[in-house]
Image 1: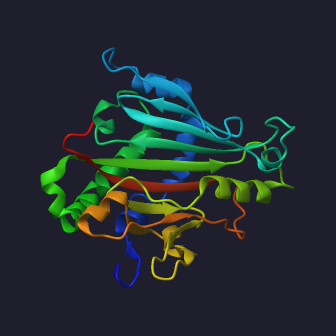
Image 2 (image 1 turned 90 degrees about the vertical axis):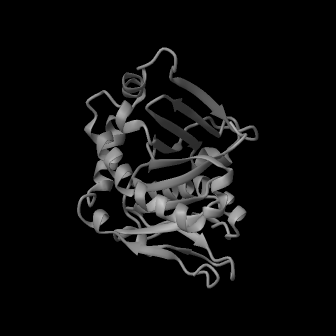
Amino acid sequence: MQKRAELVLQHSPALATTFADRFDMAKNLFAKLDKQMFIDCNDIDPTDPYKIETWKDENVPKKSFALKHQGPVFGFDVDTMVGPVSWHDETSGMDDYVLRRKCYIYDWTADKLKEDFPELTYFTDLHKEFVPVLDYYYNECFSDQYIDVEKVLHKLMVIEYSHPTANQGNIVDHKKHNTERFGDIHCDETLGGLHLGENVVEFYIENHLTNERKSVEGLSNNNTLWFFGEFSERSGWQPSMHGMQHNAEDNTWKRYSIIFDLQARYKGEE
């Protein structure tokens, strides 16, 4: 399939039934997840404290920055880009901006989560459901790397793209700006990833034979998509260059995307 640049798109009964409301639950998750909720859940071990740090882009620190929450239970990022007006106006401040928020769920999140947080528990259940799928791809595609891998990690990312300063008159410009700023083509530092859908179709995989970028329509219809990361090259695979392109037909104010990364920690590396 890869030699023919075909997509590994697979219908998922679990996404169609048990997790059919995953985008509504993602909205509920981010409505509840803030700094205090993060602290309440992650302040569990004085020997493994949580951290909240600010990151700024070296080239445009006043236009692109993030608040990164790292903890022993789960992670949480709030990524900010100044909006379409402020981005091109060097004299203005941050009058408008767009956001990308990410919640990171790990192999140990379900066991360490002590707070009553049903919106997050929903996604730890989703994590458990699809670990066997990631393990299948690991065994099928990367068996030659067993000798070099110290451990395999499964990281589920629930992502929200939003436009807090937009209004009815400029929401389209804000959404386009959000997609362009956060959607640059790239390849992940993983073995691979399993996309579990998005409520607004914008995710694309670049065809490595033609360089065509085409959105993956099936991701809005209870399908999964397997794609390769940077470290798949060690096993002879072609990494999947991907990104987002603006969906001009979309009329929603918030976009949700759910991606499950398969990561390897190699022997001799931290």
